[in-house]
Length: 399
Image (tube, one colour):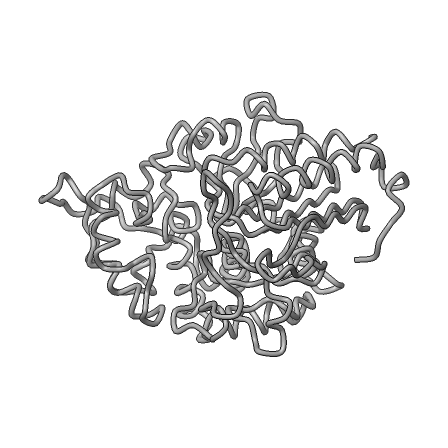
């Protein structure tokens, strides 16, 4: 995507400068590592802001081509991959997952610490695309089920995706499928579905059907040796500042992983992710190549939560607090359903998600707007930067 003149794109240069100052404050206070923000509108890049270092220990400046761990921003990508197979007529959203992954036929639901019961309905493909499957994450530390995930290292697998899914199926669900929303490993199941239905490994499907067509030349499950000088450091937020937790020179992302995580495994750049987000904004077309139909993108951007409610109404997760009031959940992304209830500017129907290291993006078709924030400071819980960024970006729009 080419750069454009901000005023011609309906962006106020003085108000864009406010965003730069706001992000610079976060890096100066040691609350975030270096930040890279890109705003695009009407098919052109209207603003790029680079603040702080890529690697504080080595004093390396952050550059636009920096490589970031995007973690859960992988989820929209794997969801698009599965919906590309949906468009070939290879499954329906309400097909049971066990049709493709037989071990899911054995699933049970926890009653208490020691007892479980059969599922009343099978886990469907819609359930795993929308986090209504009854699966969870071990890091949530709320129930005996997530404790069982930690005991089995479900969140930190050392096996293949196929082996992992079969291990996962031995553990009870937290609730009956379809009864609630809970942030979970569901998108890793989505990744396995892509492999089974397509007959390709997940990395091969991504490369052949998404990355190559969109020109996403720097997005992968690992950082090759030739690109290590562009790889950012990752930090943990502490009361007294940031602590290095993943040094780019020794990072596990330096080698191709055995486990290909559709829920959080990708490395990317701001421009690569822009190509993906622009495809969503344009109804499934990116760089002149159609990946999805406009109707399928619209289906992904529709709230699929039970009863059409917002996230806090049905969430049993860390991510269902008041910060997500007014947001529903589509197929792989959050969806704004009520701007007034959210307390944020924006438009119903925008699609968004972020990663645990505070990366974030959203696509607003009504405003022809894309915003992408890249940074490497985890966790994202307890931070308000995403809400602040939405307010700052929309305040810079002049029409």
